[in-house]
Image 1 (cartoon, helix red, strand yellow):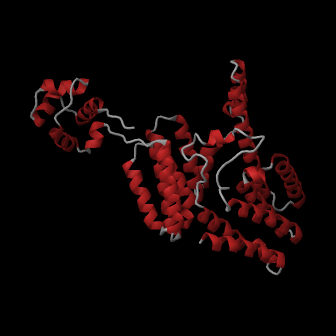
Image 2 (image 1 turned 60 degrees about the vertical axis):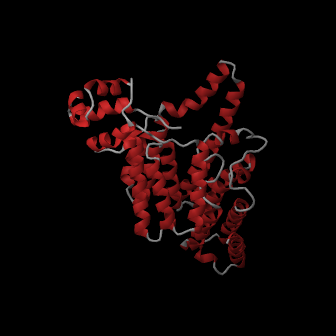
Image 3 (image 1 turned 90 degrees about the vertical axis):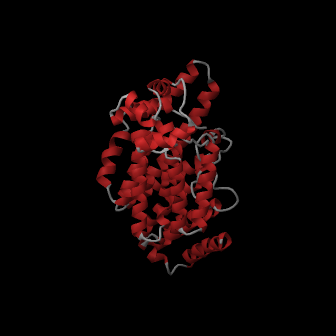
Length: 376
């Protein structure tokens, strides 16, 4: 769907150039009344006048008309999927150029621009050099600034702020990221308590189905965030083995109760990986190997059949409908091959050096290599 705002734009650009209707009419060779009708929306100029008008204001014809090509969710998903697949199978620079062309073409379609930023953040590590990767991160930051400054959708703008902070953090601008995120994710803000308010509001007007649906997605996302936070909690307290053991025990109990290995194997794989690093750091090899086996099992599950797509279970049976509303739907943000290439690098972590002589560790690595051969 596209929209035109010619009448508003002709006024805006005329005022910007500080000229009267009569002056514009004289330059183009029409009457002042014609310009007046253009600005009130009563008529449009002859198509042959458009290039001359655009040239006069030093803008494109699309800008003059206020033409903003917009993509549907289905179109955004298709473009994202195609580019994610291309990143996994084609030269990085070539795919980046393809994606940049899309960004230029749909520079006013802000939901699409945001997803292009997500795409770049999920694939910048495939860049052919560190310098190129940093340039991509800077492009993400710049793209987010454009969204924040021009998009009227508050939700998209807030997401763009967080995406920009993520890119800045990767570049090394941690202080800038902290300054932005401290306020947005402040747990004491009233907005952080709005989930229960909305559920209660739904119930108050008799919308039990809506209350059920929102409660499910809220619980599910809080579970995933809880596990993600716990992974970083292990990093914070890596030197405190007892606290880390207690954290690992509690998260494994949560996983058992809610079956997170099945619902979101990637989130649990990240946790198992970090927990294994803790045990390796403290030379508890057998505990580390147990968690690496679970890590490998989740990676294997992820990369077989269609397990990269988001799904629920008998308990969380309504979460898929929420994800289907997103621009990317239930599809994973990265291609299987890209996911594997990223996850396979985890074995280069120096903490795992103490496991190199362990046959079980070598078996885990070989099992993942088999998957790589199948994907290639």
